[in-house]
Amino acid sequence: MADFGMGMGLLIGLIMANIIVINLCKMFPKHILGIVPVMIGIDTVVTLGYTFTVKSLTDNINYMVLGIGLSITLALLHKTLVMLKVFKALFKDEIGN
Image 1: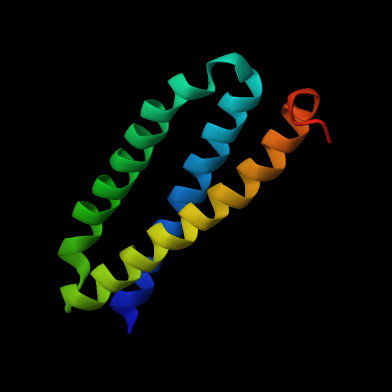
Image 2: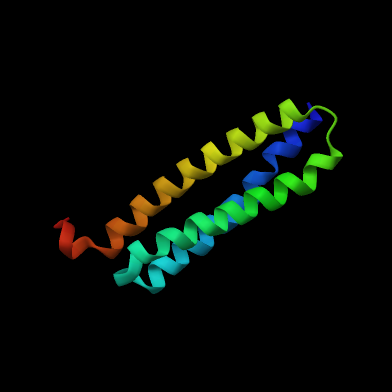
């Protein structure tokens, strides 16, 4: 079960990466589509770096992979909900709300 917790530890890094991407979207609202590759790159570096670092510390790799998969899913859910809120505020003139 500790291996699952170690896999879930990735969630902290992905949430911090989400905050960086959201702040970039606020700073450059006209270039949001250009931020997509940056977002994918940051998430990839964080995920692979964490996975290869923690892999040597685990006993059961399957539980760690399960925790990492759940972390990625929860981080994507967090990113979607926060970006919906931010984009609604940023583009209220275009949306009409």
